[in-house]
Image (cartoon, rainbow over all chains, first blue to last red; front, side):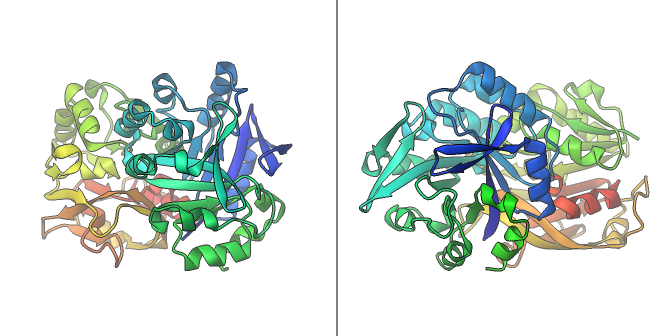
Amino acid sequence: MRVGATVLFWDGFCYQSYGWNQMRPLGKLQGVIDSLEAYQCDEISIIRPIRENDTEETFTRDISTLREINSMTPLSFGGGLRSVEQIDFLHDLPIERLIFSSAFLKQDKNLIEYTRKLFGHQAIQCLLPFSIDKQVIKVFNSEDNSYLYYDELNMDFIDKYANEIILFDTKNEGFSNCFNRHSYEHIEIDNKKIVISGGIGEESVKLAKKDNIASVLIENRVLYNEYSIKEYKNA
Amino acid sequence: MIVEILDIGSGNIKSIQNWIERLNVPTRIITKATDIKSEFLILPGVGSAGSYMDRMKKGDFDKAVVEHLNRGNRVLGICLGFQLMGDYSSEDGGVEGLGIIKGRVEKLSDSFSHNGWEKFDFKKSDLCNNSFNSMLKLTRKQNIDGRVFFNHEYGFVVEDDVLFNKPVSKDFEEYSAMVVKDNIIGMQFHPEKSQQTGIEIISMIL
């Protein structure tokens, strides 16, 4: 099982966030990546936590920052990828994998297929930011800042077009050992295809290993506990 | 010496460039087949086989790579760039490769994907014994013992007995992680994203 990290990045800065809501600036992207690389982090997912507030100007500025990143750690990137023109803009970035959320929720086959041709199927990840209340799973749709019921998703489409699915527990993000396992227990997809993030602690890592999860992404707290990645790998 | 990197409009070119330049070796991005001039060429590999090969043929890069090798120069293929060095890939309904390494590419059996790190050990003598010589002597290291990063759904099955062939892992032993033959090296993993081991590998090769 891989042990990686999630980095929230928007408008030139990385953020520490709690519950997918409160955000505090964490520093520049290159600095954050350098720190994680020094801890031999297995992979880094850079996610733009956009709501309906994204603009072309902010997107372009973020891509320019990303283009300058120098890293030898596997990187994935997503947040606001909604058009073919945006995908064309990404071809020379130092990243290997792309993360889509809204495109999967609205089953944008053209966009996903176009990306597959340029980057390959192995490079496509689906992000499902979820929240669970009384065993009911809702998935956040960033494009219109609303939640959908899990039952409304076309999981066959997601399973077919995504190489891996990132389940991001928005409610428990920023807290320890709170990741809600009901999410992947409920979803009818092989655990070997599932990546989990949000509320990850050492106990969550142990359970994820036991459940044959593909990867755990520890959120930004890792930057405040330099020993974390190593300890999590040995969990 | 300049390392040339083929850019046919797909893939993570910038990562490859950063990887080479960490050794203070200059790079040049090649967007036209006639611009291939240096002794060492990299075929990067992120994309789908059909689309990648279409672009190669459209730009006459397929012929240019073979001519580059015939002039005695070296080529390194990474991931999809390695897979398309073979004769045939079953991806995208079947794609004819460059045919410079005997072998075929097929969907990984018993698995939808192989994403992760594997242990990797390698000796410099494995290069020399297969007529591949480094030019720059950037390291005196003789052995590499580290880990490398894989991200693929298809694997290369070698059909040639007289080359150096290192399997991916015990679970994927029918597929090649690395192949060395004369002036050709192919790598299924991503050395440019394999942290310290990636640096050690390219230092030994160049």
